[in-house]
Structure formats: C-alpha cells, structure tokens
Image (cartoon, rainbow, N blue to C red; front, side):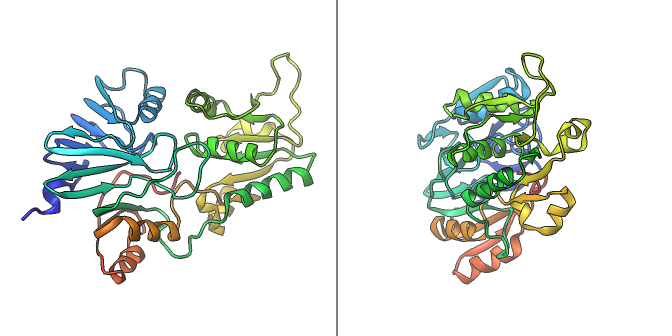
Length: 339
C-alpha cells in the first residue's frame, strides 16, 4: 500500500519528495529545489539546482544575482517533466508573476502543493488553475471565516476618491515590492487613472522585470525630490508607492501632509491598520480569503487536505465536516505576515 509520506513528507528543511529527490521551497540550501514563486520566504539563494517557471527564475536572478544557482531548469505551466520516479507539473497559482502550484504524481498517487495562491483575477499574473488531487496541500494565511476580502476595484475606487477629495495632500501607499506593488499599479490604471505614478527606488527593478514580461504600467516616475530636469517635484495630489519599510525612514517625510495608505489583506484588521498608522487601509490581498480557501479545497482535495503556514484549526474543522481527512503541517520559516 502506498503511503502519502512515501511521496511527500515534512522535514525541518521543508517538504521533501523522496522518489523525486527534491525539496519544494526549502528554507535552507539544498541540492535540488522546486520553487513555487519568487517571494523570499519560498525562493532562497544557495541551492545546487533550481526548477521553476521562467518568471520565478528571472525574479530570483534579479534578487540574488545571475549566478544564484549553478543549475536551473525552466518549467512551463502544464508540461509534465520526469524528476526521478515522479512526474512533476506546474500550474498557475495566481499569487504573483510566475507563481505555481506543484503537482506530483507517483504510482497513481497525486499530491499538489499550492504554494501561496489567490483565486481572484490579477492583471499582472496568470489566474489560478484548479488542480484536482488525492491530497491538496493548501496555505491558510487567511484561514478564518472573518477574512472575506472586498472587491479590489472597490478598494482602488476608495483610493482615487481620496485623491480627488484631498488635492493638496500626497497619497503614500505601502505595498510589498514583489507582486502587490505591481498589482496596485495595474489596478489603478484599469480604473482609468492615467496621471504619473511615483515609485520608491526599491520597487523599480521588479517593476522593470514585470514590464519585460509584458505587464504595462503607464507613466511611472521615481519618487525623488527633483525631476530629471532638476526641478523640484510637487507631490501634492499625487500617488506614491513604496515598500512598507520605507515609511520609517527620512524618505517618507518629504511628502506634503501625506495620506498614509497600506495595501494588504491584513488591513481588514483594525489593530493592524492602526499599527501601520494607515489613514487609508486598502484591503487588497495576494492570498486566498476564507471563501477562496474553502472553494479551492472543495474543488481540489479528493481525499485529504494538508494545511500549512497559517490558521489551520478552523480550516481543518471545515474540511472534516466535508468528509475530508485534514492535518496541519509543521513547516517553519514561511512568512504569513507579509504578502
């Protein structure tokens, strides 16, 4: 009898596929790694060989340098490859550019590892694709019924309404450098806002990478005190995007009476919004909310669900009520706070 642990099991280093001879998103350097997406808690430097989508490999090269691994293997969505005794294919996760679920098939058993994912449309990446499996390994960052994210377009409309109502104030929006910042920019453009958007220097390289992969952002300008002609930049009535870490630096004090906003699923928690000093909390998440998590498990888990890095108890109870076997995975080193 084949046991699931014979195909995939948790270790202190991450999920280990014994018959394939590789880890999935290992937290320490490994000989062979299969990476689901480019966020630093999943895609780390120092592996001997890395297999991922071309976009994820490009993100890792941008972050860690072109020689981040001695060997890389490009995996395109939906094309199975043989790794040891295992057939492996990647499928869109809808989280950020290049994000992927990893489907493993061995001796008739199918286990899919979601990585981080969301179900709703994102103009900057390929939409999530359901992957029915015997066992589905799901994240649970927002795994409580209280987390039901509002419509993205409505949150962007709130931002643009505030800009229109406060023409003398800059709007400073915190957004994580990979995925969230690019998504917010694209959503602002889809809403019809065509004025220049200003970005912190820490966002520039990844915005350029997204553009190289066909994502359009319109007029992006550096959020510097003086423009290219040496004239002082007037940020009143403008939108500036920056990583959250920049808000605690002198850089953030150059803007006129700024409206502070943050784009995150955690902005639905009032205490988190107050902690960030957010006058304009924008509930825009790159992770699945409760309804998306339960819909995904119902659609993808045929026999069992394994739940990782998040709030497992409520989701496990929900799955058990649906007749599914459910268990938590004790995986350390993944960041459930950031997006």
